[in-house]
Image (cartoon, rainbow, N blue to C red):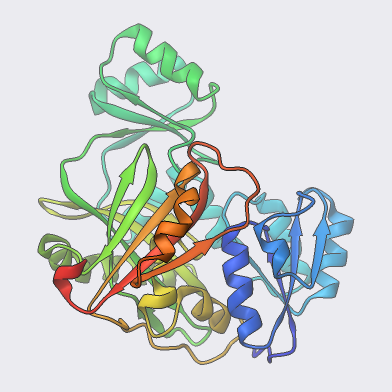
Length: 362
């Protein structure tokens, strides 16, 4: 089904990802209607309409669905019941099943493992007593993560030993919520596979960046990636393609991996445009945001080829956004500020992409 330019795209969530999806949609001639519980957000600058209501407000969701021609979402921490209701009322892409899998770390890992993906050792944790049994099997050091609603290092605690006081502290730190214990894995680098799948099943991949995280938050994405990553990209892409096909996915999908000694180790997936794909705005022929709009609207997909030999993307966290003047003085830099009013530690305020004319420049 093709949604023609001039139609209205509904986006659930009004953050920076919704903002950049919306900017791509406007460029293609669409209008944008945001649904979010907040009064405003980064996407408010580009929205022709904004519905403020809780995700649990069925009447507001129904009115929103009636007002748009197609619906997508900018992040996965949307209640699955809300997306399921929207799916009954209209067309939602990616579908509700993809969201449900990505929202639950245990389900996500078992789903990918069932398709041949390699994961870190893991065990479900439902109580402090179960945590003791799990770490006896998995070993320390390990990471305890809530099964739901965790991102950018939130909802997780490192366990450097299996002492009872360490386990008690970790279990309390995540609010005694259902969790998964993951064993540490040895790896050389982190990288991501960002793909787009069209309504006809066509899949295209962007080049995989080398990702560096600081304090659990993505700091940089750089291309080309190191040789050890490039050697593992074909296998990682094959896994990602199987995931997309199994979910009957439409839109941009991201899978994050560790480059391990035995091959790529799956970390997590995101059923949406992704921070590690922000470089594609200037660094690829067609950005992840434009191709997401193209896919959900049933348009032909654009080329995902690199637009330059080397590209680097740096997130601007907290006060780093205050360096905007120095960044703009760099002729290779493309600055993106998200319009957030307050810079806080750990808050993504923007990003800067640098496009280089040679591999060595990155």
